[in-house]
Amino acid sequence: MCQTFILIARAIVGWALCGATIGIARKITTLRDALVIHAVATPIIFTILSSIYFGLFGGIRPATTAAIFVVIVVSLDALVVAPLIEKSFDMFRSILGTWLPFALIFLATWLTGRLTTGQP
Image (cartoon, rainbow, N blue to C red):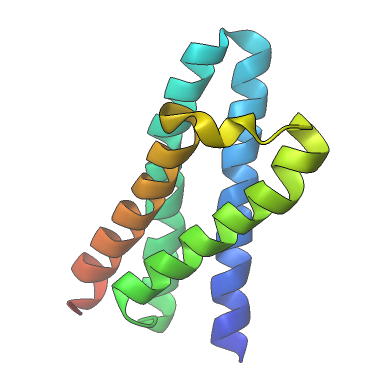
């Protein structure tokens, strides 16, 4: 139970840090540059969070952890960001702004889990 809560909390923290990254970047640069910054920051953020998680708990299988992180981030984007912040679901049309970061979250978490735990 505690491990599940910590896993979910890490995903939410990662989502919030990615949101802060895109939010700050949009205020100081162009939208395109902000999306690039976000795409670069996302795997760094999730590598750090997942390395701490796997290091402390060993975690569940890396692919499962990665999938849970992505499902939580996609859900929060669909339930919070799109309707309440963006007031549009157009963000889901952007490969650079949405789909690439989702893929990078999965990849960064999965690879970190593989390297940290040795699990397949």
